[in-house]
Image (cartoon, rainbow, N blue to C red):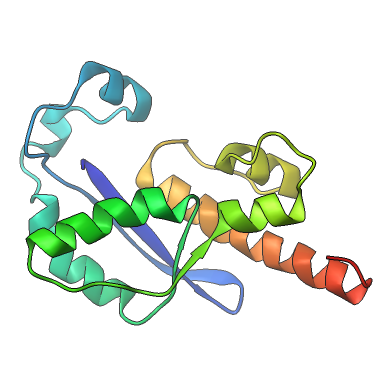
Length: 155
């Protein structure tokens, strides 16, 4: 874990966010650095994810955690919480599941593909805050699509 971010939605808009770089327990692999652009020099003076965990959980509070592919993200978060002796089982919403339900004929349901399909301007892919903000906006658009279809008597 080298970076963590989340965004708070209220009334369909992002009203706050939490984003931090964290010092990994091991080395950052070259392939990973090439993907997200985060280097060891960038994280050298940062706290570890375990050290950030209390402030991050306080930010989330009782809110529903929205992820794109929740089992992946929540697996990491729950593992860190378990190591810290924290029982953490928040409500979750998964934009990937919702996207597959609303667009069953589409092959690609990646966050980038859904952002493009829904007209959401995505930030830098594979950076935590950009992905969190994109996920939040995609979630809002998916809910709007679902409501529109329900009003039309569809899905």
